[in-house]
Length: 516
Figure (tube, rainbow, N blue to C red):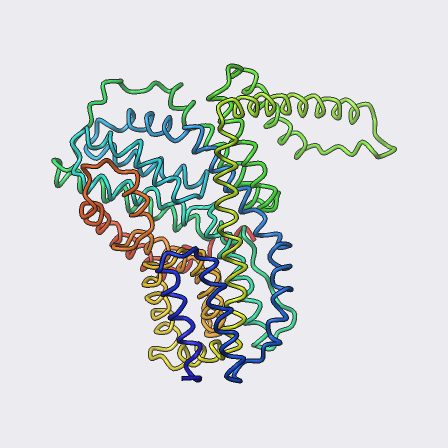
């Protein structure tokens, strides 16, 4: 029994999580029990746990993971301010007259929200509450409508800025450095969040394209499933379309453009995104809309001018032009600050800030508690010899590097039925990814394959998390079996996406190679 204690520990973790006990406490509790058993049986050196304090300090001082709460706050503000509802309404009026037009609208809004928020649960629930009843009233097949809503909401897993990609970037970078050390390289390279955001952009848009093609083809072949929608509101004019679409697009451009352009770190870009989301919420809820728009224009002008003509007022050789430019910059900054104040006041009055902060604190606490507990678990698992066992299993699989990667992809896919992406990313991937990298797989390409795989597991019955989110938000007339049937075609499209990225690695590696 002692030689299989590491495997028993992993099985015990599955049982503890599936029991419904809080995940982080389940992970830490299993680690405590098996650390004691390993020490009592004489197969684990308990002094290894002395590294736990160092791991905890490394977590709270990790510059990459600091971006997570800010991105979560940004998404929560956009969700609570009903911006998704406005987007869906406008898109539905644009495309509703087409067969499958509402489905196209939902996928496009899902992509925009994914690039604005990166929070899967919130997006699926928002879509389920807003879009699904409209699709049912328009005569959509309930299974088809459920599948479209569920899949569109899950795009937040792969389209940056994504919480999954931030965690995955940290895990893959650590695994890449570990693989380099094991190969005898002591001048190691690191991977950045920006590289993974860039790598995920084209595969994410590829998945959106596959979804849209499927909806158009199905709408043509089976028009009764997705009839044209008569919403009775008429097509929106160009001003309405711009008012609904331009703010999220500008927000996406500001956040992703700053990261991919090397102008800002992910944490700094997330801060810009949070302010942008607050201004968007203020534009929608405040009575001082024009003043807020003036402040937004001032901040955009400040960013452009300060980037193209930077001023250092502390220098002794500044002329009149520099001092005038400095005064203009200060005026623009004060105008923008006033707009932020107005937006903040409106958000407080509507309790948007209260609800957004509550969501942010809840999700951030869950993520960081899970990562901390996973660090404890992995220390004990390594102490019981689990790391050597994993390396041996992966090294003895048939098919070489490709066969090993296929096994890991299937294993992660199955785990996705039972575990959240956070648990898989911080418990399982650090054990298997170093071996895969040492076999010659590109770490960025590998990370994107795993991200799409985890996204697919979110959709797969019977335990896909997105299915549970939609079940909670869907009307009573939608049966759980209809939700399950609806996502099956999209799981097939996800498999096609994985196959395309696997067979054409440049889909994931070209953009980060060009930018970084």
